[in-house]
Length: 128
Ligand code: MN
Image (cartoon, rainbow, N blue to C red; front, side, top):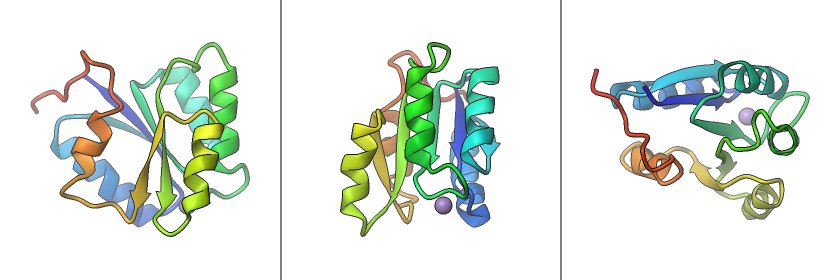
């Protein structure tokens, strides 16, 4: 089953993203800060990582950079979750090695399609 790691400190956003993904048959993993996100990525090697930019402690861009530098996680796509108004965040996300970004607040009708763009070709959601 395709597994997606969500790194997000806002509990409401976490629940929304997790529910949207699980409804569509994805397995999800949760981390509430960058350190935890990196640890879970290394341990569980998800198919995709959704990375909030603004996190307590280590920010999401630093976490993305560290994931890119580690051979264990370098091949996992990282998609930044950026605040809609913060256009500079998007460029910084790409420079940090993120594969792309999804603007927050999440558009629930578009979210699944936005995520699927970044999944490896063979990875499709399972049917629960
Ligand atoms: Mn945040």
